[in-house]
Length: 251
Image (cartoon, rainbow, N blue to C red; front, side, top):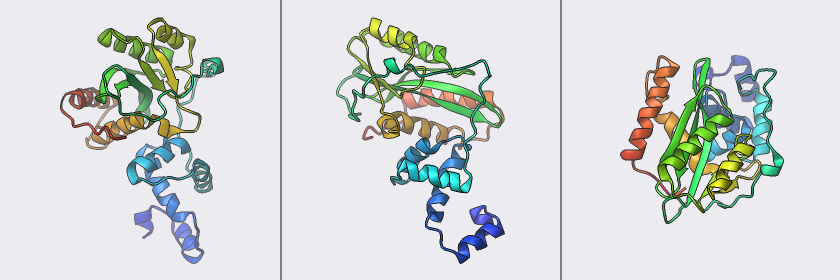
């Protein structure tokens, strides 16, 4: 039993002899946490539980259980001279309001960045989806999680679609999307900026779901030997996703 649950004998007998109301919640939280390669914080764990199990946990409860059992996410350390801050005056309201099914192309795009991690190496994937057909409009992969990554992705998408006046682009409130560079490009092309509310990952559920599927069907389904191989698989998978994979547009 200890081997199945991946716990020590001491922990097993502790909870065998004293019922802990958090223990079984901890087991599924731990599963989502480990599937993320120990990188998810409590907010992404909350969304992961919704996507995989269809259950809703209060984010404060998840944080408490993670702290209780020592589930601490591994983040990339920033250089001491590198500081990124969200520009609060550039935070925009949530225009999409979780209405993710739209009736025409170039009406609403959604965008986000996710980690591509292999062992101790990582890259960053920036993606823009069109909510009409859930196809990838543009994507960029970089070693750096910075404003340039987002700007390059946005410029690529605009160059492909061209007719973007009046379009809404939705993101979270990360520093890249509150930057003056991002704001200037959107305003110059007549693009409206929409942002999720703080602590509400379900506002980004189509993109969260996309990144979850991508990782399950690339990283977890292949015997990868290097980060470069992982990146190549992601690029091939995005081509497959855009041209052949059946989309679920209900979320």
